[in-house]
Image 1: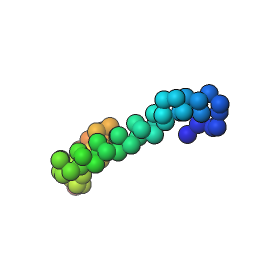
Image 2 (image 1 turned 135 degrees about the horizontal axis):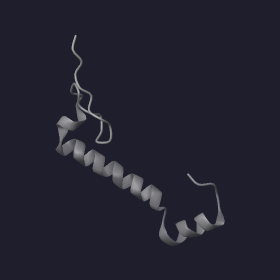
Image 3 (image 1 turned 90 degrees about the vertical axis):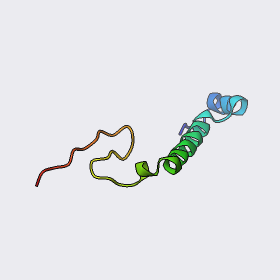
Length: 61
């Protein structure tokens, strides 16, 4: 994500790689939700693929 920089390398050494940790936690939460709410992971007409996409209304023929 970041170019090799002394400041970033020092922060990672002191605090850990926070972006990697956050990404891993988000993936874990996504997997947990898919297991608990299986209807969210199946494709339903008009259902958004994720919470940040707008819902699409069914089109008339």
